[in-house]
Every structure is written in C-alpha cells, then in structure tokens.
Image (cartoon, rainbow, N blue to C red; front, side, top):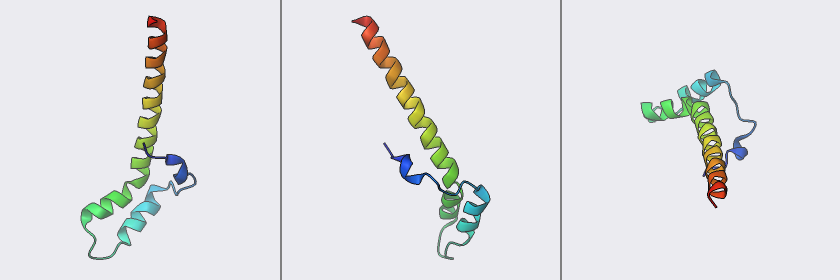
Length: 68
C-alpha cells in the first residue's frame, strides 16, 4: 500500500500540474506529460481506494466476529 501521507501539502491545482507537464524536456513522451498532468487525480484515486479497502476490512472483521 502506498503511504499517501508523505504527499500531504502537495500542489492540488491541476492547472499547475499541467504547467509542470508542459515544462518536461522535449524528449519526454506525450504519455509522460499526461501522467504528470494527472498526478493530483491519481493521488485522489489512491486515497479513495485505500479508504474503501479499510472500510471493507473493517466490515469483514465485524462479520467474522458475528459468525464466531
């Protein structure tokens, strides 16, 4: 699991990330620019999925206790 806490305080403005993507060297691929541009969206998705994973684990543990 990725420790997303180390990214706290990152720049959330997508426009700024798009600016960073455009500042990549000429030899960078278009896919590299898209990846940099989508960084805030990818981080948000990782956080959402981690939260969902924790919720599911909690529910499964609760069900295990009920079955005992």
